[in-house]
Every structure is written in structure tokens, then in C-alpha cells.
Length: 585
Image 1 (tube, rainbow, N blue to C red):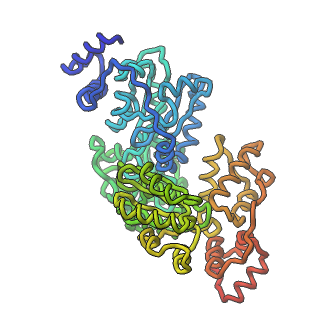
Image 2 (tube, helix red, strand yellow):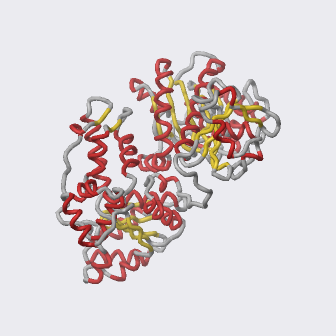
Image 3 (cartoon, rainbow, N blue to C red):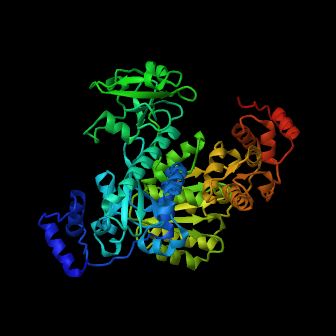
């Protein structure tokens, strides 16, 4: 479309004449002109966020990326021969996962069909992801439906992905660089993207509700057990604690904004939680009929909890960036809940832990979970000269922001004095200090300024070493997904070996081992011969507190605890007997 034609189109849009555009597209164009001040005659390039910004977006969406990836791989295999590209964008419109033909990588990057592209409406104008985020509905934005000239060759079909609380969490987009046909040719793409979004929501619900009843239902019985339309998760009182978007639409048709969390099942259906066993797979599908209060009939499939269903409790919620730092480890999640509450404050934080336990990543997650619009600067303290302290703070944090001090125990006395002066003069800085040492002990020994210690240690958060963590299986799976482009798995022997190692380098060492193993493995399964040997072993025996923590993390398994601590099992037995420790139950 030429410039003059664009001017005429603007006049038609502002006059409310759709000129062949549907209502969603017309309203989006008006927002682009009136709200964002955009000019459709300008060929604006794709907006790509920085690598550090992309890392933060991916960390916040890490759980969803992991759940969605296998489904997206399957979808991409279906459409790869037709030159489609798949994008998974977060709730802010930034692409956090991508599947496309590497032969067209340069063209895809230029068009914004790549990792890190920002497809929010205010950045990209009328587009599939942006319009989907605004409306909360699936939409196709085809060729000249796009607001900007740079995007008019594209055809983009997007569907929303909702979380288990009913909030829009992401957008799945399937796009073509160039579409030879009219908009109606994208009907198949619309069906595919809607079905995939529904399956991702279902997988997300099932992954997070292993200890609750899940009721899946469909209007027809044929695919009820394998590909249901909708599902709700229920506590043992029969209240809804999670749901898919399909459940919201079926149970509250015409009112998608009506919240169902906390609603009793028997208020919506002629069904109570005690009736759910009758809907399990022991009965034929066509006999598992449920009746809604308005008289509509559905077919139901109930899935029993794995273990005792829990009663609803007010568990502290973790902001996205913090929720990706731990799996099923109660002590670590309690610490992260504290970090989440502190994130919104200006309290200085001291993060303690061995090398490689993730102190900087925790600092970044706290920063992301805090107030928006602030900068984050990481300063390595080893070898830092006094004159560099103020210069780094001023250059890196020009306004309000977070100053992360890595290895603060490495500052010499003069640099400590300069840092104290900088923090006293810059009350817009929030310091977060990471240390491998006992900083309080160094202060008592005269090797670290006590006034600086109290300036940094407003609150202390301790990261446990890997050998004490109870979520190693979760970590192994997460890190393996990060380092393997393929769908790799660990053999039982390799998993047992990794769980038993002492990990003096903690997460950094584990990540490196999995990266090497992924590169060396010839098949899909990583086995013992693919694992590089341990880099180091602990030189000194663990103190009583650590021995107890490692035993607890290993579920009382003496042999596994001995391997993590790098000693013989007989040594563990003698120390347990000598210290009078009880084996964890």
C-alpha cells in the first residue's frame, strides 16, 4: 500500500468505515493512530529486546516454556513443510520460544518472527500477538490487516493461553512470511493453534494439580479420555482450585470474566466431589454423563489425586521469576516466598551460599519481582579498586536501581570504605550483596567493616548447596531442557549417578555436566558413559548440621548421602552413631 493510499485508509478508519476490515482490526488500527501515535506509512523494523531483557522474560516464563515445548515440537512437525513459523510470546508480547526453518533465519529475524521480538500492539501495531493479548481471543491478522508496512507480507494467527487461575499468560502464534492466498486460507492454522493452546493449558493444569481431583469433560465422548475440551481441578471440599479456559467458557458461557476459582462443583453441576470415582476409566465413556445446572449434558473423566488431596490453604504465591528457581523443596520455597515479600521493599539484602548456588540469578529474580522501571547492575568485587566503585555505580545505575555486588567479601579495606560512602550518598540504590563467606565472622575478625556489613545485611537469604536440595530431579529435567535442542532423557543409571554426586560447584557444575553430556550423547538417552567425571570432591568431612541436611535431602538413604559427601557409607554410619542422629523417616 503506497503512502497516499495509507492516508486515505487512515481517513476511512477514523470515520469508522471498515473498508473490508473486521471489527477487531479496525479497532486496533484506531488505537494505533489515536493512542500510540503510529504512522502506517512508515516501515518500522521489528523491535528485538536485548539479550538481558530476553533472559528475564524467559526466566519468568520458564515453567510454561517447559510444559509447552513438546506440544510445540509436535505442532511444528505438522506444519514445517508449509513454511510456517511458531512463536510462543509471554503476556507482555515478547517471543520467549520459537520454531522455524533455519534456512530462512535471516528473513525471519528481519520480520520479527524470532526469539526476543516484541509483538505488543504498542510496539508492533496491529498484529496477531498484540491483538490476541488485547482481546483475549484467537485472531488472524492477514497481510494488509497489519498496521505497519514492514509486516504487510505476513499472515499471523494467534490464540491465547490462560493459566490455571484464568489469567492470560501467553500467546501461541503460527505465522507465514508470505501467504499466497486470501485470509480464509488460514482457517486450518486457526484450528491448529486453538487446539494446541487448549492442550498446553490442559498439560499445565495436570502438571500443577497432582494432589487434587481433576475433572475433564467434553460435549462428545469420542476423545474424552485422550483429548478433552476442558478441565477443572478440585480440592477435597469440591471447590475449584484451577481450570482451563475451555472450562470457563463451558461453565460460564457468555461471561468469560466471571471467576470460578473457589466455586463449589455442586453449584455448577448435579455432581459432588464424592461422586467423582464413578467417572473414572472403570466405566465406559458413554456412561460417564454429567449434567449442568442449566440442563446441558456433558461427558466426564475424573482423575484421582496422587496421594492425599490437600485442603485449600493460603500458600504464598511466588512472582514468575522466583517461581522458576525451585521445584518441590519446601525449605527453599519458603526462602523464595520471603524473597518475594522483600522484593517490593528497599531493604538491602545479603545473599549467602557456596559458589555456583545461584546468588546472582536470585538477585535478578528479586529485582524483576520488584517495582518496574529500575535498572539492574552486577558488579564483580574481586580486584575492584576504590576509584572504580563509585564509577561503576554511577555508570551502571544512573537512576533508581538495584546494585548487585558479587563476592563482596573480596573488597579490600579501601574499596569497602568507598562503597560505604557511595551507598550513603545514593539512597536511590538498593544494594543486594552476594557472598560465599561468613561475612559476620569476617567482621568480628576485623577483616570486613562492620558498619558496611550492617548497611548490606538488612535481611539475609541463604541459598542451600545442591547436595542439600530435595528437588534435584526437577533441576535435572529443567537444565536438560535448557541445554538440549532435542527431547533428550536421562537413563535411570545416569540420573542416579548425578543425584549421588557431591557437586562442590553446585548449579554451575551441574549445568556444565549436562551441557557436556548432551553434546556427547549419540542418541536421545544420556547414559553413564556420556557423563563427564566429577571435577572435585569435598576435602573435609561435613559438620553435623550438613550431615543432617544431606541425609534429609536423600530421604535417609545412607549410601546416597555418602556419595554426595564423597565418603564411604561406613563413615556415614559411624558419624550418625557417634552424633546420635536419627535417620529421617
